[in-house]
Amino acid sequence: MNPHTLIIEPGLAERHYWRDLWRYRELFYVLAWRDISVRYKQTIIGLAWALIRPFLTMVVFTVVFGKLAKFPSEGAAPYALMVFAGLLPWQFFSTALSESSNSLIGNANLISKVYFPRLIVPTAAVVVSFVDFLISFAILLVLMLWYRFLPGWQILTLPLFVVMAFLASLGPGLWITALNVKYRDFRYIIPFIVQFGLYVSPVGFSSAIVPEQWRLLYSLNPVVGVIDGFRWAILGGESTIYLPGFLFSWGVIAFFLWLGIRQFRRMEKSFADLI
Image 1 (tube, rainbow, N blue to C red):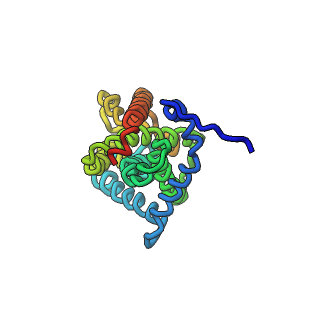
Image 2: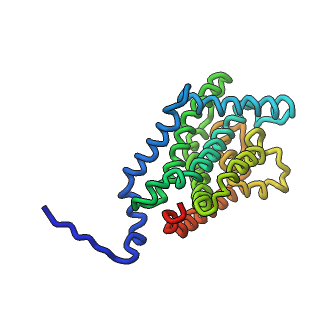
Image 3: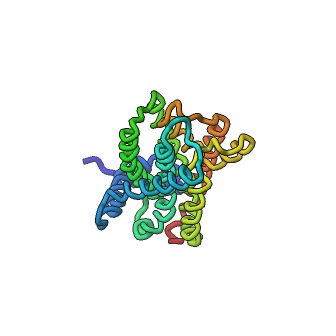
């Protein structure tokens, strides 16, 4: 048996950080699976919660914005289908933001005792939210069958927008996770941000109703580009993408991803002490 050499060198873990992410991939799987099983293990109806919540939200938004406020749909697409096409990425974003922001504090015992790249913890929380997204996607398929709506070739681009939603969730999630460890007030701020964002994002209405002169500014909300992309992919010719705003949303997503990773890595060394 070949002997192993232990090398102790200042900054060695820092230089091998991204390599360690791959080495500790099994821990990533364990954390993600644990969170998935815990979330539904002691619930009465289990996975159905991931179906009931978006369905009821869609019904409320369809009645309030579609029936009472008389907001237009996109093209000839049913209003309920348009709402749900926007609700899918928003639910993914909001759940990922909420879960990842508390992920480090929820794993305080593990973080204070064992070394591993801490980036694994909030990323695993985002992946768990993605599982909810996949479950909720079943409602979209049922709605398409109910309305006899056949998507166009654009549906093939949906994986691109799923990646876009994942990155849009990961960047702010990492940033707020790091801040939440140092400033525990953020646990009270996050629910407000999520609730406020639901109404300022084009979930219950089409972003096309925003006046042209404000649409680029409106795209400062990165979820706008994600929702518009989802609707274009799902509704096809019934929906359009405001290209300048869509590209601007990509820029905002890239900025928050850079900021999130930068701030997380900067504060990572102090996590064990602060927790």
